[in-house]
Image 1: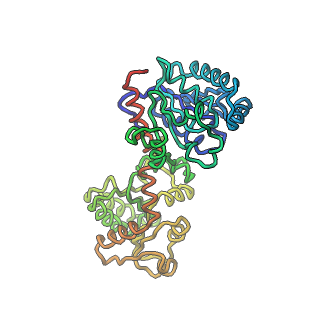
Image 2: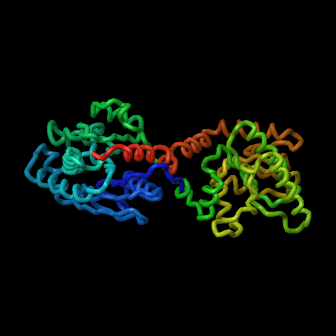
Image 3: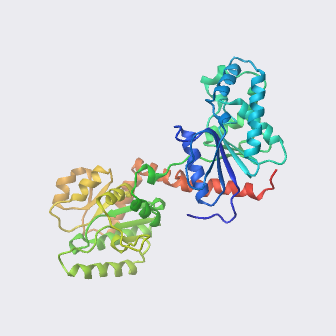
Amino acid sequence: MPTPRRALPSVALLHYAAPPVIGGVESVLVHHARLLAERGADVHLVTGRGASPGGRVRLHRLPLLDSRHRRVLAVTRELEEGRITPAFGALAAQIHQALARTLHDVDVCIAHNVLTLHKNLALTAALHGLAAQRPGPRIVAWCHDLAWTNPQYRRALHEGAPWNLLTTPIAGATYVAVSEERQRQLSAGLGLPRSEIEVIPNGVDPAAFLHLTPVGRWLADTLRLWDQQVVLLLPVRITRRKQIEYGLRVVEELVRRELGVRLLVTGPPGAHNPANEEYARELRALRQALGLEDHVVFCRELRGPDGREVVLSDRVMADLYALADALLLPSREEGFGLPLLEAALARVPTFTSNLAPFREIGGDAIRRFHLEEAPAACAQQIIHALMDDRAYRFRHRVLRAYRWDAVMQERIVPLLTHLAAAPRR
């Protein structure tokens, strides 16, 4: 895992609840906590309800932060009716004291949603009071939802205090919105310039979403498959009739066009012909001659973290189909074409040589090329087909801009290192 150049500050992540409570913000909270802890930050999860995500994340359960706590619900009902009773002030004071103790040694408190939603206005008031104190943690108001833009909440909001805290910038805080639309709404509601509100989106963990095996996850990370523009899968044993050298020439053309490419040749040399080992050596020599050592992977050469050969089980092969952008089969002779069936189930675009069994299986759903054609023509066909595929473009947009590791390293870590460099309030 990459390590930032400057040390991260100690960070508290604060919300009404945390998993196993189900919710989008709760999920984001845990991703932030785990990723920051993996990067060496001292992470505290401060919540009214939920459990620790484990690892080096420390849980602080303060029941009065929970929007469903009986006292909080009672006060919320009074506020929805427009009534401010002594119970509100007592609750806000008690929460303030609990937060002051819990956050005493924390550098940055990231408050998710609690400064722009009315689900526990006593907590909102307590944070405003804490921000006015010196010294105290730097507060980051992380805004997913806004009470004043939601028609469903209008009846619960009234003029004056404490409801106006939701549209009052908190003293000295940094504001973060999860989208440009939220940034625009936040700017209008708080009266802050949009330039003073960071936009940091939520993310996705593709390995978890795709249910990759540990080996599949290791392959994706080690081979940097998430960062490639084109991942080609060539799931064959190394035998001359597979024409793997044609695949290498296609990759050469893609690299010439400045694309990030990985070609994964999954199989070992065919078991029944001793000449296949010589063919494997020829392919390695060609890879070197073409300067493709970083682009063409013969999976039988891979050694896992334990130093042993990586075993591509059927389950791991399913991982590779999930990771691939296209299937490439440049065979000069085949009796069938099992990879076409697998690619179809995985919805992976298929590019094959123009063989009768491939035509029989794939019909007009696959793209074919002639081995007599220059590899540049095949490379161009792959480029045009993928660039015309909206699903492919969207997938790579998500991998580039919304993968949790990328969001953390490129957006959140720089923000926190900047705050760490500033003197504590």
